[in-house]
Length: 384
Image (cartoon, rainbow, N blue to C red; front, side):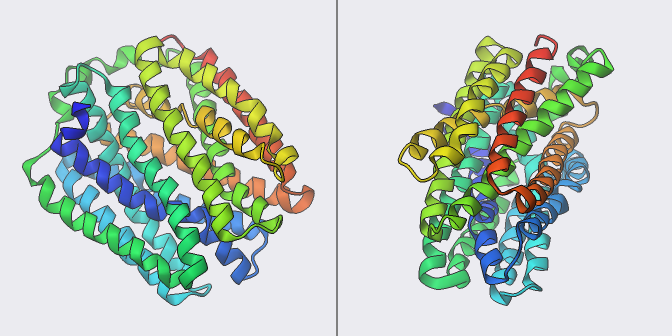
């Protein structure tokens, strides 16, 4: 596809891959630390929530700065930042080191609004308005990082401990430096797009429509965060090694990446509302059945189905928000990504609390109900 030959798109895609290789370590490193530091499920959920919120709450600010011409610094600088501070956390290897992981997440918060804006505009301006497709391929790079991250992380942790992950942080730092020089030639400018003057036509016409969209974004994010954090923890409690639960987590994320690309293509062809509702509804049964088949080979079928269908709407939600939310496009990207990550993180905190009281099985049933709720909210959106 010619999109991958685009110099701007390929650079931000590679940077996204590097950033999310480190974000993907949450699936294995945080569980590894939970065992090492004797953290409860509630504490694990709190740490994960703090990591996400630290980046999420500042994303609108980072997006505003990117709109004012700082996209290059946000993309390249954010990639270098997460690599440097993640390395510091790995070297300290105690409770104090958790602070550096949280600081590292700010690099992810700086990167995502600028990268998302540029990816959408590349599709809109250079590829016949295929904004959701372009956005979904941008997020595919991130999902590939989230896939390879736990896969490599599990192997490196087993063989070399936390210091083995320094190979991954070094890669991110080098990619960030490469992006800084590669992006000197500029970007696609939101101000030049005709959609800037026409966004009001795309906004929801009532408070109920806004509420439905907010519930859709929250529920879909909560589903993904529950699976990323508590699927490996559930498998760890069953006695699986970091290598095994890292591989299964990677399997889920890879399936979500494929679903996101398919969902983006279908949304451009058949409409965002219909595609999101159908895909989320199909995720409900696989999610609900995971605890019943966790010890059997059927899990290898349920995990990709759950990942494919639940991950298919992420780019749809982001592109809708870019049209709904007034202001600069990077800022609107930062607002929706911050909202998605924040609400998903808070949901994980509640899920961890419930897991400590009732067991992890209830988390998967809750996740299935959230997917059903998200499907209903997508169906109630205004046609687009």
